[in-house]
Length: 119
Image 1 (tube, one colour):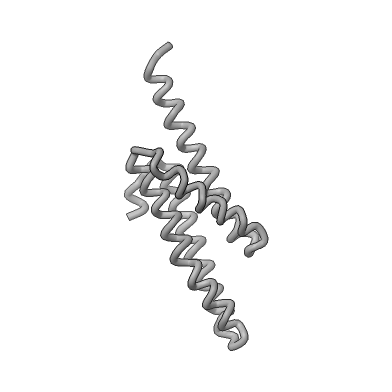
Image 2 (image 1 turned 90 degrees about the vertical axis):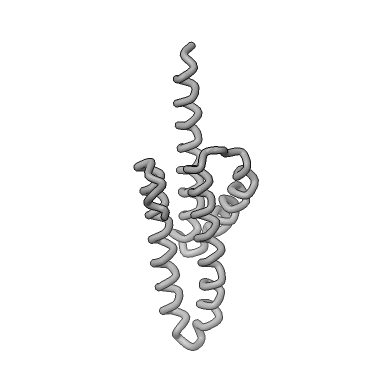
């Protein structure tokens, strides 16, 4: 058996793993919180599996998703608090657009194997 084939298969499995993490992460936002448990599960998996990857490409993606989560979380909380003043609706819209932009940008970086998109 050729050793190079195993390396390619391993990288391919890492790509699929990260693709599934993006899918889980985005499902909570796409369903407007109905499946937010999947977003939380993806964050937990990232924290658990982050040290298993040595490739900078995957570590960048893990950091990208974690930053997206931790930055958007307080904005969503503030948005819900300010909904009674109607400014919350604007804040939710802006936060959702920003989060969607970050998810799409990260996913495109994964698909095109381009880590420079994330900088």
